[in-house]
Amino acid sequence: MGLFNFWKKEENLFDENITIEETRFVVLDTETTGFDYENDRILCIGALVLQNGIISVQDSLEIYLQQDHYDKSTAQIHGILRDFILKRPTELEALQQFLTFLGDSIIIAHHTIFDVTMINKALERNGLPELTNKTLDTAYLYKKTLIKSHLFERKDHYTLDDLADKFDISKKDRHTALGDAYITAIAFLKIVKKLREKKAISLNQLFK
Image (tube, helix red, strand yellow):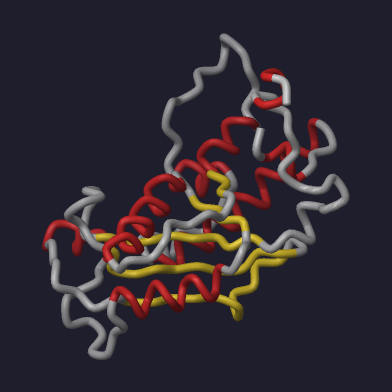
């Protein structure tokens, strides 16, 4: 194999006949005790299926994990108290439930690297392999919808609140894992619609 072929960036990840609609996406959000990958822990995993342009709220997952680690400052944001729910799965049980739900779906999240890294750290702690699923980030995809112009100042960092405001999405359940996953799912559908207004877009092009 020639060097050029090996490093070819335009390699298609998926069969061109597979559409965005028929692909099974799992939209993910985690609520955590903080932002330290090593020392903080996942409080809750929220995930729902997005397929055929439909957000399947009935096909969703919301798991509150057993907690040894507790941080009062972050509890004010997500509202998850130590004794909020009496019977919670262990981290390992929660991960097993999530992996079964996820399967080989493509993960969508807002600032995906955070949620995926938190889950990978938890998997590592429990002697399980890292996720190998393809991922899409609505923060990155949103930037693709913006007009490139010196008259328009683009931010480096777009929050989920920015996207909710831009696309007029209700923030009623903001800062709950499932609520944020739902906002992210709607934002993804709006982003794809906006990208299609420019030109036809394929599943492979979302990854470029």
